[in-house]
Image (tube, rainbow, N blue to C red; front, side, top):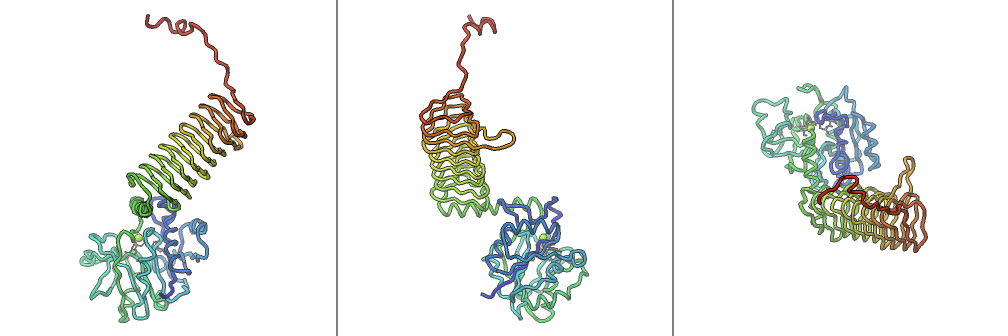
Length: 435
Ligand code: UD1
Ligand code: MG
């Protein structure tokens, strides 16, 4: 297959998003919309151009976090507005040029590849959606299986507005045709913009063909509003979950589960309803129970939750984490922490039991400190471990202790105040109750 250059249009303001954030930086499944366009484009091309205008520094910096080798261009938006203006001044490397919109996060490389046959005689191959209602789209007038012209909604006459063939906004051009005809565009239309779609009529007038390729509406969904964004995310989430289920991951009520783009799940893992997996999380042969959240952590051969929260940079292996346990930046190996605990900046080793209500006091208001706990430590309920602290192997900590000093292996640590019982106090305080 002949090589392609790709231009992604992302200069628009996206006013209908009603947000200060540029449209293409709104996220679905944890990544900016433009990330997905570039990711798919990279599968087809090593010559990728992105056209920016609004907050271009921010958009560029956001994408450079993920990709290199991309050319960024700033559109002369004031003098040359519109999708045609956006493409002017770019010199693509290859003979065919695919033009994409940056606000279509659901496109897939494999489907875009089907457009890769533009030539001297067919200078434009374009995507067409057959819709019940083409409201908001440019209408594609097709005669004898060839495109005759594209009319923007605002420029449609009574008959054209009723056409259900819509321009999905993605085209493959013959480079020579594109570069020689862009300078001929004019802005004599309702929006006073330079339309890329006017190139279609120019090709037809020269006796050349413009071939329509029907595409799946779901993949070419454009995002223009917060509602569109939410719908695109639902479709994207379904794709992510379907792929995991095809690999043998069990999901209970998958519609209630949220999994971000970079998450990996392996082995015979189970996700119950309401589970949220964020960032670079990796789940290996584990059971994540109802309403638990795991962010950028590794969970291996463990069970988590219900209602547990594993915060970034944790590694939990062969462990049991129960309800209302929060773990942050900690490394747990063969540990049981069944209930109501906070384990932050800690390392806990094999055979250790963390009693209900155990808290690592890792922060003194200025700095964070580490808690290191060895093997076979029994931590009684309601223990505060004031970091920095090192508990060696084989230590028992009595319930209710506040531990501030490192014990020795084999110790019982007991720091609670001795119990006092004052006989008869109840009746004196409350008066006699009952008989
Ligand atoms: C465009 C098409 C329309 C098609 C629709 C599909 C034109 C004239 N119309 O209309 O036929 O049905 O897409 O979604 O092309 N952009 C720039 N610079 C600009 C203007 C737009 O980079 O000056 C970018 C936008 O950021 C966006 C894309 O181009 O990513 C499409 O622009 P948009 O304004 O959404 O075009 P539509 O009016 O939807
Ligand atoms: Mg649009």
